[in-house]
Structure formats: structure tokens, C-alpha cells
Image 1 (cartoon, rainbow, N blue to C red):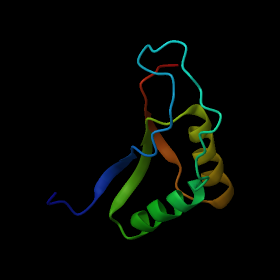
Image 2 (cartoon, rainbow, N blue to C red; image 1 turned 180 degrees about the horizontal axis):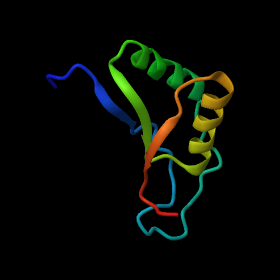
Image 3 (cartoon, rainbow, N blue to C red; image 1 turned 90 degrees about the horizontal axis):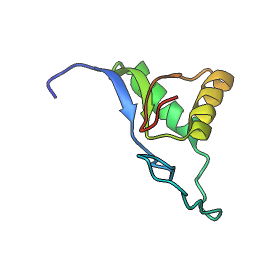
Length: 91
């Protein structure tokens, strides 16, 4: 990239199944399990921030639940807060 740092690292993972792009009657799968590794992800991103490789972090393609979990982990463990969101829906 020929740059010393990235201004904002937009996390596009994991892609949890959500009703988006106008899809109606979304078939929710109750057996869909996601590892609760929000703190681990934020700790890893925090290490990159401390190294000066990235300055800020944001999320994309995340559910409201996932967004809440990232914000709660950041608050309770003094980790970087997601400062942007890029989703397929609008409030």
C-alpha cells in the first residue's frame, strides 16, 4: 500500500446472516452459532493501533446485536470503540 498507517480499518467479518437488500421473510436459523470473540478481535485491533499500523476501527455488514457487543466490550475492557458502521440498511 506504500503507507505508514491506515486511517480506518473497516472490519468486514464475520458476515452474520441478516435480512438485507430488500429480502423479505428472512429464514432465521436458530442453530446458527457464532463464537463470542468480540474481546479477542478488539484486543488484536488494539495491538495494531498501539503499533501505529492503524488509527481507528469500524465495522461493516454487522448486525445490531454484533454492533452492541463490540461497543459493550470496548466500554467494559477499555478497548478501541468502533467509530464507523457501513451496513446494507439505514435507520
